Length: 222
Image (tube, rainbow, N blue to C red; front, side, top):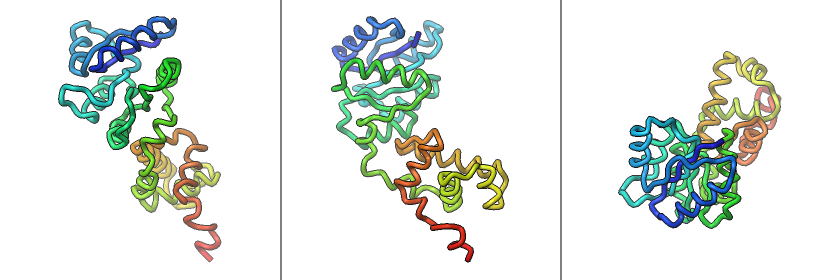
């Protein structure tokens, strides 16, 4: 059973989603309210554990920022899905950078929202059209933020070398190479382009032209 909290200051939207979730056997709505402060106060008063997934409106009418709301909920121990009309890409990017697991449009069919909740409850990140639209235009950001060493580790790792071999090739400790890959993944998550698997890292490296940084080692050293 996935414990879900709904935070939206549009009551009709919130109640509609609450009714849909009530019809499923896999979810339980433990809280429904208009802002994050009310949710956290309920948690404290009820001595309740954090919801597994918090479905959060992008903009609440209490003067809080999206970063503040996402950060507070994530720090409290829940995964966050942004439920929004998704017409403000900058705000969506801000939410993703603050730690939201993904975004679902308010125009999406209910079954897609339920599916997104299930995906995030399993510990997976959403990768959908709304997400892609939100980060469009920021495609080069992560690449620009990677250090020269991080780009080189990513290039070799994404090209197929085991991480141990990457470390040996670059003359660094295995722990250093691993730390570099971890930082690369974090930076991609921060711009809404998660790369949890090696295949995802390969895709990001190809998108950003990192695999073309150096044609081959012979060209580098010869």
